[in-house]
Image 1 (cartoon, rainbow, N blue to C red):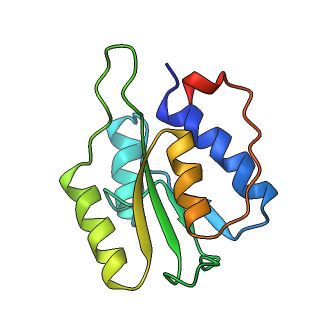
Image 2 (cartoon, one colour):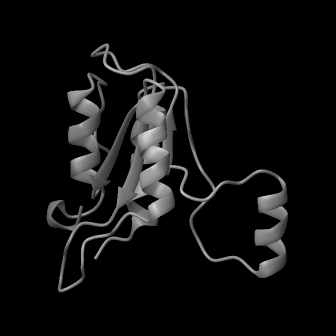
Length: 131
């Protein structure tokens, strides 16, 4: 089963190739208490979406695009779930005119981006059923 980190790595290649102005956030992953405290003091906020695209969607809907990546349901594992902080961030970004979506797997992320009008080309080295 492909992990959220692997989905994000694949998506990063695709977004870079599309020459979009975007960034990933550093919210994921396990950290020791000292590092977590330092990042919090530096302004890291819980729940910020994984991907922030500052290039406005070509569809004209939204001033930017935020994507929270979750794993899709596979091999007996449950589909990824949003935390309360993630829900709030998505709602707040929408209220500011951003398009903010949850993507369940790489294919879903690419569908969301295509529906926003972004022209992307897949670089997947994963088996089609894994993404």
